[in-house]
Image: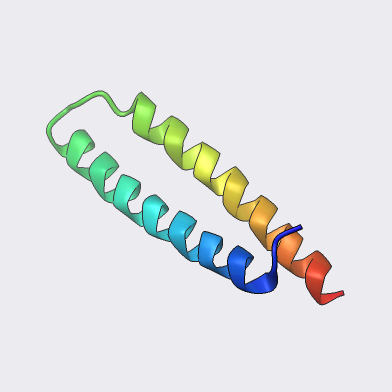
Length: 61
């Protein structure tokens, strides 16, 4: 099982990826590009973020 510090680091990394992909998605929408791949990545990241948050909560209990 990961330590609290490892999970917090992973959470920061996932959030950073999410912001970057959201920005890419905004650009793709602006130029009428294909957004489905970026949207799928955002959904995957949202699930990963939720999982890491759940693991952090379990560590704190």
